[in-house]
Length: 177
Image (cartoon, rainbow, N blue to C red; front, side, top):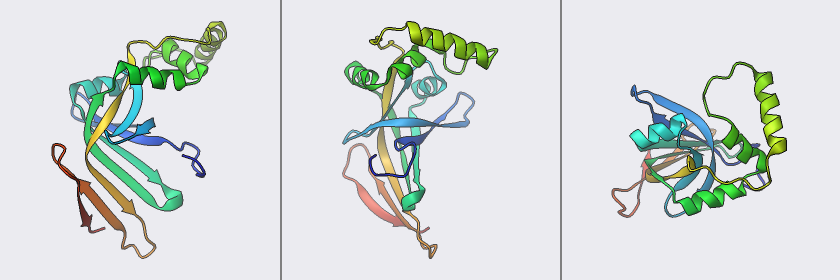
């Protein structure tokens, strides 16, 4: 995350499947990458939260133009623990915590001016410490495949695909561009 020209250094695109079977993609803030997988946070009441509770199959995509690299992750989303959700919640700014508790994500609002005025008033009246709502947490994407695409001027791009089944060791294979 450091020494990068990217404005949103931890942004990844997450794709879920909606109830009609269509893919839905949006950017999220990747909070952590560890041996378990790739973790991001959201409202469980959001479209993505609802979609993941119905179908945990998910894909992540990161694109880093400045180094000519794309990373695709495919796996299953697993709900994080309350302890980990608390850790991420309290690492967020007050503005982010107030916005999460104030807004009902994706619901219709009649006026952006009204929305901004009400949010500003709520922000000013809110204490510094705001409890994490039970509807807010996160998911760890446990990967079963990771593909790293390294772009080359020659167009002979390098595609490394790492796959595993049910926790077995990773196997790497080169894919043609």
